[in-house]
Image (tube, rainbow, N blue to C red; front, side):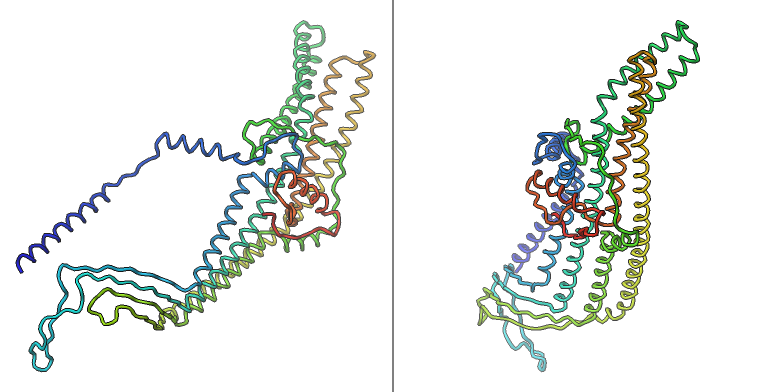
Length: 512
């Protein structure tokens, strides 16, 4: 007996030492920062992944190809697609929560000696049986159990429906991102087109202006003309040059922004399709009241809040379900390796009812919380509706202003071009000097740049108005296996989906 006790104490001592060693090793853990090589490798991999799998630029990029590239390769849009995919995966995962539990267990139990027991009579107080055991020292057991809680099934069903609404919210969020990307591409594209169209003229004229200013300063220093005349001429040239440089800076940045939207590698050279001028200005066949109704019916932000309200309504049903008693049904097969058992394998089944009575006390507070969320969503939807209606009217006003500015810029450019022709004719017969010709050439180039910018503003404000109304800028049934097919589908969609007729498609099914 003493030897068994010492052996038991020895095992306990060894076990204690092992536990202490494990605990000490856990306490010795320290933060391990990233190494320089790991950071460099990750940076290299990320740089390669930025443009992996993209179709190379093989020619001048049109507006529709630029939009197609943004929709296929823009990283913000990819992130939105991944978030939608995550919502879909969560929905798929939530469906499994409605299934019953099917659990398998395999157990091994051992002890250093036999478990035994004595029996004592409750009447005489004397032991009625000698020490005996009914279990082996080493026992293997296993079971396979099917368990289903009816209440958990109902709650899981409502959670799955909430996850389905979350997928629709992600879809509406994707619509919003698409609208923003398309609008940004259209604005950057037309400004970049203006830059490419005028860059050679601008560079040549800048060289001539620099030479003219130097000549004027030389004339001033030699006092070949009145100083005020020379200085006035220099001021005019420098003022126009400063305005041109400011316009050039804004236009040159547009091409960099367009490259970023298309996810082209920074610094990669590409050309744009330069369309002819003189395109007709879009007309709007809808009344402001009709556009208000369209916006309230189709804006993604409104739909997101409606889906959130549906999710909150299902939360109220979950609160009611939690009040009900839970019915748990179990059935399973069992096996035990205990040789003392008469039956080593058996089938077990049963039912249990449980009821958390405290949920009744919790219900009023839960319902108040749900009603408060519902009121917040209603207030948010009304505030957003007013903001959307304001955006529609602001969009209409901006578009009308852009049209007037475009017509003014067009008239100014036409008039300035006629003036330049007169000056060029006069210069040929030497009735005006070179300085006057250069000044009018600069004024003409400024007018041309502003004319192009005014057209870009029309395209931008028109795209913004489409977005404010909630018209989807991409077709819902387009095949996007290649850039060419996507670009062609976008071209057809843009030509048919506008606000110039009452047959505008308001389908919201998405491309991806």
